[in-house]
Image 1 (spheres, one colour):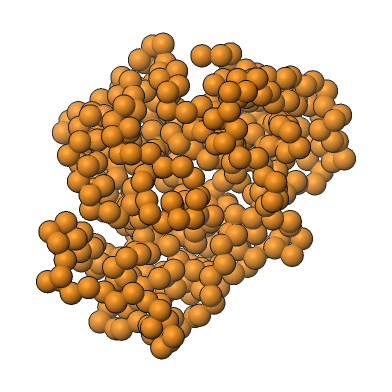
Image 2: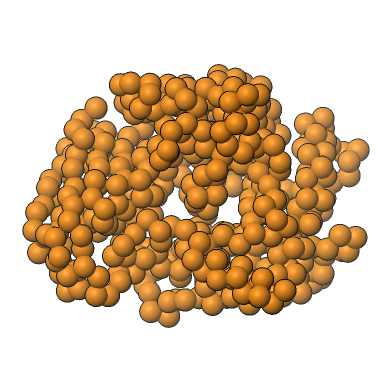
Length: 436
């Protein structure tokens, strides 16, 4: 058994994925997963895990049949759960969904708590580098606001490429071998090299992963991403819409859009003719769930929907809040389905179908930042390999992916990274695919 734990931990340190309860539940380290996209840089753990939680090893630990061990002060602050008789029809349906998922979430959390070796590593993983890394600057570029200005088409970014065998230690951006100035907005920009690239806009520096591209634009330009040939479409489409949300509005975290706007996303046109997996992040609002199931997925041509849960925990393994909190659940939903796939025949023969419910467990990063899904969903993606992947409403980039949204460079700011020492940059270059 000890050998098994050792092997699982060794695999986790290499892959960032730790299986719990077989393949039904997995723990993810987003930093380790994202670092697979970079050769000369690494994600700073202290910058990624910037949210701070009260350390309380005995609190919020969910065990079936047990009450939460909360202090009296926390109980007083917590909103009282309304009685079932006080709920309207939609709220009762949402509570029923929660109760249906509750046993699975309890088992998932209990499995995490029993993985003592993994729990013992979490604080070290998250605190690594925290004393030496400077967090976000107060003057970080607000791309959303810049994109609204009439001058937006005039803004340009400087892209830097390095010579082959150029040791990066001590080489500053101003000493690039080749620098390209290119329009920043409404332009598909690609780093075609098998190496990280650097870009500069105003006083900020950005890190672009290898073989990646991004387009910074609003919803009016999203159709520019539709490929000229349908057999060149995407096999994995991840979507994290800015749903209307009271909490987001209060925090002014990012601008939201009415649900009806998402009906016009060209998901079917973006999908490869041999099939695509669509993964949609959504909140726990019942009104939203009904909209997605009854209107949005049918409009996109998405079928055979399945659900994953993302359960958020603190570094000590406890949930970020009470599992049964009516107003704030410690989990979010990921709804998945297929486009251009005959699930009854084709899917079963080519890849594992999304028939079973799964739980993703991780320590959350900044507000609204989701864990990376590509590696986890790889075996579920239909169509030719290697798969073409795209994220809509992206706020960061991944090697080999296309990222679209009004701020895909948000988490690419160099303040979120640490630079490796002594690495040699392989040959490559940065290219613009031109205005669309």
